[in-house]
Image 1 (cartoon, one colour):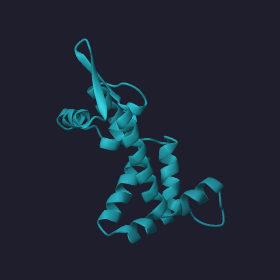
Image 2 (spheres, one colour):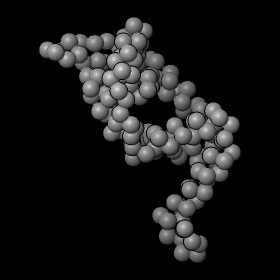
Image 3 (cartoon, helix red, strand yellow):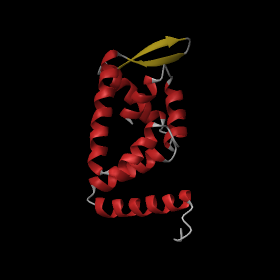
Image 4 (cartoon, rainbow, N blue to C red):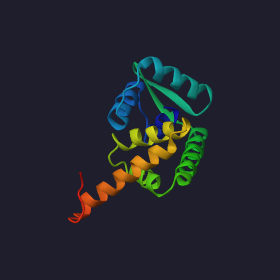
Length: 147
């Protein structure tokens, strides 16, 4: 959630509520205030973000250190994805193009969990089959079934 929060704040100032709502839209799950606000405090204490009061709201934004941390995290993530191979690179490309935000990050998260739990071979097999089926669907290959 740290990376997603930094990424959202790289687009401009947001309130904690805005962050929760936008994560719900883009990632497909909406974190609770009990997870977002402690994270915002931790990021503030780490010097990665800063808050600015506007009336009864706090608008959060990245600091230069936060921009550096985001760039570093993105580079680390990009390196991890490159190690996974061609199919995963396509997933990363879809995430970077924000297309579709609600599905691709969840897929990337599931792939990460599969790798972390030693299930990468099966996950890559499933992803490869899905990729092949989607290719057939889009290209209209009538010689093979797309069931």
